[in-house]
Image (cartoon, rainbow, N blue to C red; front, top):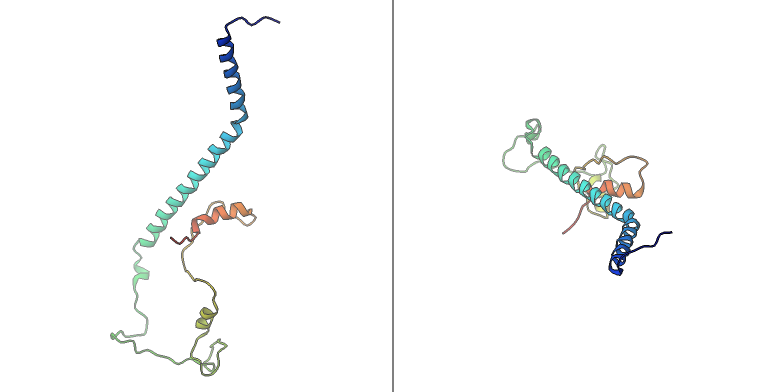
Length: 149
């Protein structure tokens, strides 16, 4: 075994370098995980932004075939004079209402609803599949999450 020659300052410096190298090796997995998490977060944000751009483009593009808003068979005269009476004897009325009720089955369904009904287009996600885990499912659903501010 050879004797180490040098000043105490140089030995202290070498000890510090060795300790730093050991610490760096110990924290390598944590740093790599932080980098992976940052990349995943950036990818999710990028997909969300690109999805919103595509959705906005799709919703705002001109669609002449579906732009015609007039109802077929009705002559618009400026007055809403088209009234019908619905009761339980009306053919194909599937409501469970009493004879004095004028509610339709869809109105009854709305009254029984306990939450907010929204009809929004959903943004598809590339990682959405039938046998996904809970974490994958919530990650895929993040783009379609509704937030109130």
